[in-house]
Length: 553
Image (tube, rainbow, N blue to C red; front, side, top):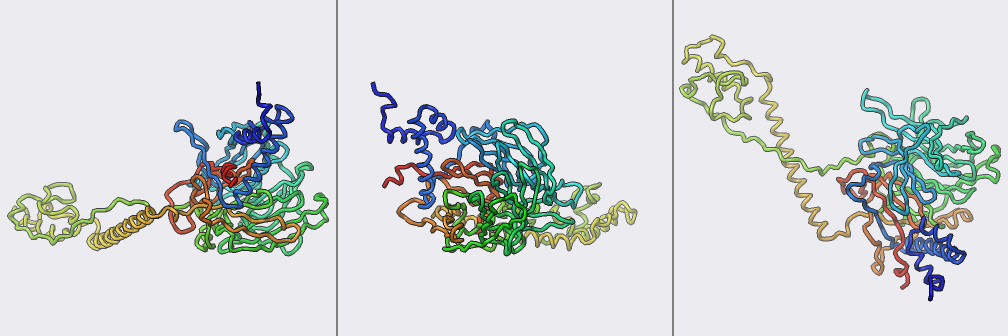
């Protein structure tokens, strides 16, 4: 009787391609030598298919869903994320109300399950925009920033120079104090080369002022000390919010970034490390990379994270030309409140404009009783609208005097009305009426615009702004100091995506898994000018290649 071992290798590889590339595939490797060889072939095929899908421009978007009784990780942006083994770890971040976290979550990439890690040791401060890298079964967390409390007022936001190491196996945080630490920094980047963590750029706070920097600091994780290497000129301009790509143990690529107000960068720089990274006297060399086919560059590269896939760098962004308006919204990336998107098309209930009518002169015999004065005594006069009370205060005085004469009160004081609380109530009312009139016209205009937008959206859904993978070829960066953007697929022969691509967002995380990219969190942002009523996201989105049969033709 034939068994699974009698299957041809092609059939066995096809079956293994259908299982999860994480724990399941790792278990299959341990069956026998033949299965181990087939699993290795499956891994290489996944990488090849994913790279081809990105290059062709057709990817599959998938987001796991959860039952209503299961509460996943809270919504956040500006968090720190990295992949270790079969899990993605997420630390910190902040919400739309600028509340920062110091929690640590683990996302199982095979089972698609979130787990909050209840760790021991010294917890980091609640913060966002810190760097987190993996080294020797540990997570190394450095820097970050947080918003101050609401009270007392006028507090400055806080930058950190804290260094924490999380032991993954021991589930424990440890705060480390090493000499030569950089100033409090946030919005920087980091990568590990051997036993040295290289930190570049960021927003630093020195002598009471905050400014972006282009300094390079190194943390020797074995010798437990910081040092600042000697770098060559010219060097990149000071920046934060950039991407740092590790090409190999001796080369680092820096992409884009923001240097402050009206300082948005799309340049690319290569940092070459010396052969002996521990030799403090050897110089580190900066070189700017010449970029070809820049017309295919993503339109908002300065706040979209980049990720290395093979010999290319992938950036998820919208298609089109660079938008100065979109960049202006992010020129103060770390300033409190500037990254929160407040929608302007929020529905406002219409206000009933009071009807303005000419005042009627009543005969004294109609008001034999004392009129109502400030709601304290007497009776309301018929025929007077409550909205007209402020304007008819002078009329009330005349009527009361007449009534007092007929009733025999004269100037006894009881029939005399009290003076108005606001002497200029009539002029204030006129101004309020004008404001209400303008608000009513504005609401009508917004309603017409929404109807027009809804009609246009129903006619064509292709106009919806979505993200598209952009690829930068870096195969000749080290040898020829040049890179090239691949054209974005706009062909009608092949679909541009399978599934529902996400809306444009910013301040999310993008990491590389096994044959796919993992996108998490962020703030919705439409660079085309459209507004979004969505809040901060907690969605995990997988960007992978379609099935192998898609490319068979």
